[in-house]
Each structure stands twice: as C-alpha cells, then as structure tokens.
Length: 346
Image 1 (cartoon, rainbow, N blue to C red):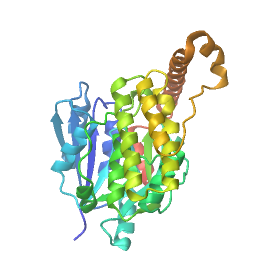
Image 2: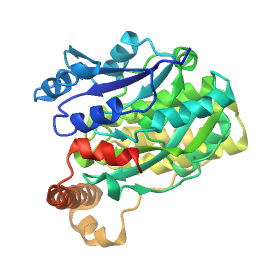
Image 3: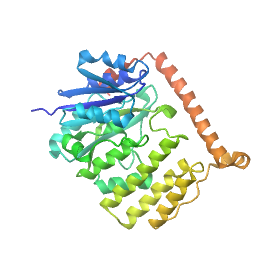
Image 4: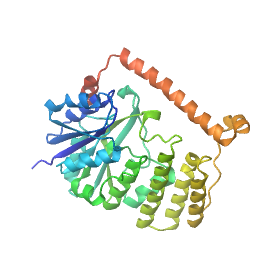
C-alpha cells in the first residue's frame, strides 16, 4: 500500500502567508496525504483562512495559545501518517517535494533513515529564493552531521526533513520549554535515533525569512535567551553521547563561541556559565567583539548600547527589504495559487 504522509502545520497569527503554505501542501503530487493545521490561539484571520481549505481535505484544529512546540505535538497526536512532513505556516513546499523524497525512501527501505532536501530563502517572491549549499547538504552519519552543525553553526530548515513514523516516535515529543531553537533541538533527537541522513537535492523547500517577527528571532527576550541556552547545552550533550572525543569537545566550544554574542553583555550569568563549560571541555572563549563600525557607539554607550543599535539597524534594514520585495511581488501580480502552480514546474 502507498504510505500515508502527514503534513503538519502549526500556525499563529499567520494570515498573510498560511494560504500559500496550504496551497503548496494541497498541491503535493504524492497521492496519499493528510494535512493537519493546529491554530495556536491566533488573534487574526489565520483559522478562517485555513478553514477555507477544508473542502480540500485539510483538518483545522484550534487550541489556546501554548507555543509552537505544543502546537506541533497536538498535530502529531492527531496524525496517522507513515511519514511526517513538518511545514511552518509561512513556508512553501515545491509540488514534488514529498514525492521526490518518498522515491528515495522506497529505494533506501530503512525506516530509520532521515531524509533532507535543498532549501532557499525568500521574502515574498519565491522565484528569488537563494539556495546556498552548506556542508549539511549531503549524506551524513549522525555524529558527522552534528559535528558540522556545531563547528560551523549551520542550520537545516524545518520543512526539509521527511521523517518516518518509527523514527518520529523514537525521538519523542517537541520540547515545550524551548521558545527558541525548538526545531534544531528536536531534529537533533531525531538524528540520534536515525541511521543517518540522506540528502535529496531535487526536493526543494522555500523558506520565508520573517525577520524580527519569526519564532526564531531572539532579540533581547530573557525567555528566549534562557531557551537558547538550554538548547545549546542539549546540543552538546547529544553530540558527546555519540562521541566524546577531542574533536567533539572542540566543536562544542566553537558552538558556544558562535552563540556567545547573543548573551553578551545583558546576560553575564549565562556568559559565565558558557565560559566555565568551555573550560570543562578543554577550551576557552574569546570576549565577543562588535564590528569596527560600532566602535564609536561602544565608546559612547558601551557594549549594551552597541548591541542594541546593531539589532535596531538590522531590523530597519529587514523592514525596508520586506516592504520593497512585497511591493515588487504585488507589481508582478503573483498570488499564492500561482506561486504553487509555478513551483510544480520549477
């Protein structure tokens, strides 16, 4: 029998983009699929827009706002699929994404293989998505995947993965404590239970860059900083459970160094913990440095003022790019339906 694939979509205040995400899910060429949307207490028209797809077989469930991880767990509990496809409400799947990975799954014949795909960033114009390969875009063992991720602070986007039910159940639920980095931590656990990743380059995901509005944006939120610190510690624990070697400890120190700037100087308690952990691992962290362009601001306002200015300018730049790209998208007159139709031929 053809395996059933569950496409699971958590959604919160995503009225501007959930329609395009659902269009891409409905238009998947894989013949057996179920689509489940869990609206996590949205206060906009997300649930109303999602409900319009019920005639296409989409199941829409609403719950009080509990966070993305809780919404994902709810969707998973309702699913029946032999394979799980996660999809955030602002991202888009190429029409043959699932079918292409399922073809690879039929050849591999191992429920413990974790399938990944290519992904590109865009704002509003998917056809401008930039697909930039990294070291993770290839077949890797669990330990080699984690070493690369942590040494170079790399990332594989959530919707790229296709996961068997067996592997999903072995990994356990999403961690609701993680208000940030919940996807990276979750797929580390999936990876630990797998026999490695199989990269399917023909399968494609379009990842909408949401800037400061995204779940992954940390900014100066203490709750998200705490969650990120928890996730970092879990990453290190997972890697060392596979291989507690000199290279694994070095990768862990590099990972700590990459994230140190997010905690400095507001959360010196975490900075001290990170320094101690690096020392325990046989390494040493360098004090975070801001780009030279911020040297005058650092002199006048200190490190905290320089960091705040850097975040503010980054948000302004993103907002300007977002407005421009949205305007061009409207001028070029491509709506959500045509997005997915065009993707089928891309």
